[in-house]
Amino acid sequence: MPYATETPEDHEFLQQAIALSRHALEDEGKTPFGALVVIDGEIVGTGTSSVVELQDPTAHAEVMALRSAGAALGRHLMEDAVMYSSSEPCPMCLVACYWARIPRLVYAATSHDAAVNGFEDLRFYRQLALPAAERVLLDEVAVGGEAREAAAGALSAWAAKLPFEVEPKL
Image 1 (cartoon, rainbow, N blue to C red):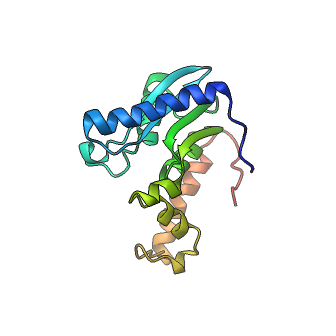
Image 2 (image 1 turned 135 degrees about the horizontal axis):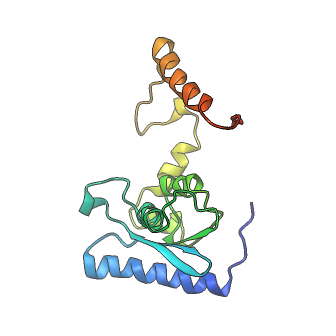
């Protein structure tokens, strides 16, 4: 998908995300990442990187903004929202946007900019592009047999309880 066109509203909210990242760095001693979730021109969630503070490797700015928006809205799906991020989200944060059904993401600094400054996002993107057998950052073990059958059975039991037929996402 080609890049979408930036709008004047995008510029306004992106500047706020960048200001949030600067505030996190300069006033709170955090890494310089800021994110906003916006619906109909209103900020419904904000986040800064809180990984060290919360001792939580998933507490990235975008995840924190999604958590904030979810709490404010009382829902986890945000099909009507835009995510504004000071930097291109790491793979985890990008997928969190996918899980939240965010239809639009606007960011400033790229993963290359982050890599030049010591962040591993680009390295992780490259690892995820490889087949599992070629990845080197951790040992992945897919267990088969009874364990797989039991785990897959739990997934099937969940799907069977849904009020609609599941559409496989293969």
